[in-house]
Length: 398
Ligand code: PRP
Image (cartoon, rainbow, N blue to C red):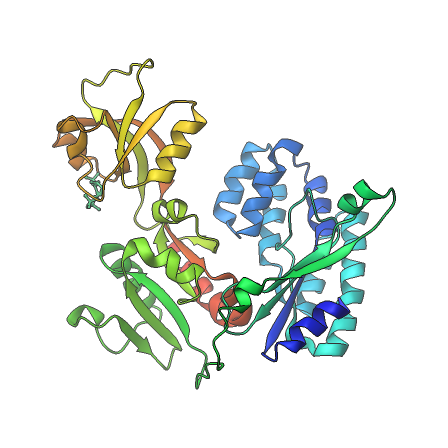
């Protein structure tokens, strides 16, 4: 840890260290009876803070409601270290969890002496790969960079493969991330939370909700072609972006948070936190085809879609061979003109399909707008992100 600290100090920029412990998380998975085969899936939801999906995964894993609640609470154990340690203490269900907390607590107090409390944060859901790390896990974030520049932890099982009983701890500094560091740190008079808002119907709905709880802007963005509008009093700045670009802005840290359809989020594969299902813009990702469609398993299926990766993953999971025809809109035309056999697209009311003599063959992914956050912004602007999340949760659940 000392060497990791020195490395970050050498960079002469404000930085944060974020710590977690595998023992706490695997201890919790044991305590709630998570089956081996579904642990990776549960842990992926925990790591992306996708509580809404975590509940469905927990149900699939046969967990009790209390078990699912405990895993969801884990996603909230983030922030100032004393506070998190106190909350986590009340959650420890076995000795593995208590031992992990005792170790974390000792490390945190040594680090706080060296760095000051505000630079040592805990986030107990940010654990590494279960097959690799087995104890302390840590990340270093540099102000101005959207992703962690330093990642490390304890990986005894790997070391033991080379020498029985060996123990190991290490870290990597990501030079490619450092290359993106701006020459001069950008000073802002105050901390603004930058929100990527999708232009169009969905963005308008979300904006109206936020405006109803004092997150609106004095100027009406629909009255002009302006792409940036702000409310300095609320510390909010909106970037009006193409819906398909929201996740990219957030992943790269150009915006701290954003609201994006699950379809676009999955298709982009963006590495972001998915903090809330707003329930807005509900529809389904479907396979659709002509009303008289008949499946011929001997032929490769021609699939027209905007959602290439989603379509490929879906048919791969069924072992069906397909050819993809990538289109950018009016997908429903493709089967009508014989360009494809079927389409993969979102269906909301079903009107477009009906009016073009097509029907849903399979619904396979429920879609709605998700509130997402950049991983570094979640650390550096934790209070601002948490406040907005709370407001959005309140208004969407009302
Ligand atoms: C989307 C989608 C379908 C339609 C589904 O199109 O691609 O065409 O909405 O909605 P419905 O079930 O209520 O009819 P969009 O309007 O985004 O235009 P696009 O053709 O450019 O994809």
